[in-house]
Length: 162
Image: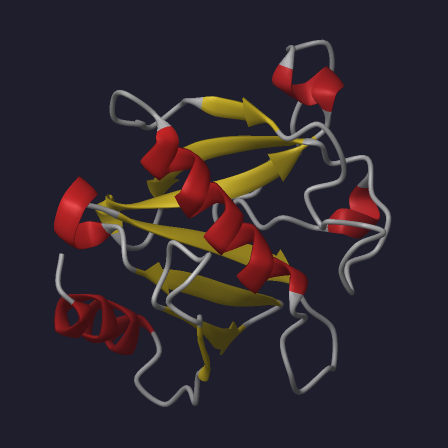
């Protein structure tokens, strides 16, 4: 998927939104850039860089309050997951999960808060379709099916809920 196609898809969802953009240095990073769009109650982030080789891009939705700028930890998370995906022998797909081995926020190594969300589930982005896999942070108990994941049609990752 080319850069313009990602920008067009996100622009279709947020025609009046002013996204925040970050670029990643070439060395040591898998993604070339990422954008965060302010949405109702959350930030919707998308990475740029996997589409040309893998046919999809990663997204994540992160709960937000009144802050005017997105937190930095989701940008770090997108690139780390992109590096993980690139290291695999086969493709990733809807429904696959990754035991992150610690808080998905990167706590204490990033600006992210401490959280019990330690597993990422990859799902088809509910508004963008199958060319976008959304990362959804859940607890280990939720991933194992011992506890139900709260109902949320947009599957927003909220570090405060765990």
